[in-house]
Length: 298
Ligand SMILES: *[C@@H]1O[C@H](CO)[C@@H](O)[C@H](O)[C@H]1NC(C)=O
Image 1: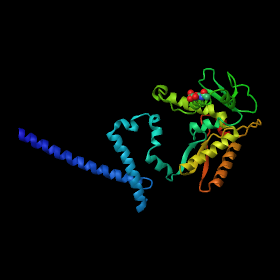
Image 2: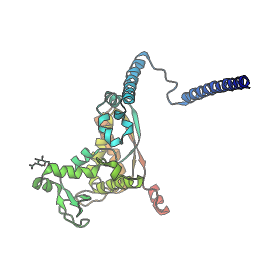
Image 3: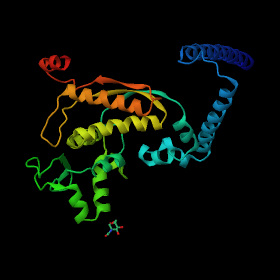
């Protein structure tokens, strides 16, 4: 009985190993076919490009190997907020930053620049600030004189607050309203809906800060500048084309906002002729009535 069982067993093993080999080969063929469909597959690197590629790939492999042997430093095991600043210090990141990248094809009007930049905007003249009673939120508006309304406490000039209180502490308090980054993200952002709420509130609270016409145009110019710093040469911007306002009480319409984008793009291209340009994609809120859609189209 035994020998027969062993022979049968061996045969089964052999058969399995044949099947396994066959499947591996199939798998390789599939991967090969998939590679051929990838963008850039047909590009052949020159000798120097191959050298450059090897430098980058080596840095990448080194990072991965290091994480493999030192799992406590393996970034992808952590929350993004914990390592996002560390990434910027790596050699790989610095090389990637300076490499030509062509285009950014998806960006939203006021979601492009970071909290330090937005904080700097609050140094502009004629900005008024109103904190909620429990300090949990803040409103902004530009005006020549103290605004009335939209404030349960008191409108104060940003400039005056900085003069009369500790400006460092004030800035730190304000900056928190311009970022999702916190030290305890797992506790604050318990689920997707919660983080989405925080995310949306940023756009709502900064609305009147950004839609002040001079700020809007500056923000867009500085966005193009930041992209060019990253060696991005072309930008497709999705915008809700919000009405802009100025200190004289003028409210501009969506077409004016589009004109602002065009004018600033042209100015930027004149200042930096190597920049390829930008394309505007009108992307207003979609959950609206039919009538509103007709207005959008017009
Ligand atoms: C302002 O606050 C910061 C941080 O709390 C502190 O280091 C600094 O000494 C304060 N400056 C003044 C003038 O009190």
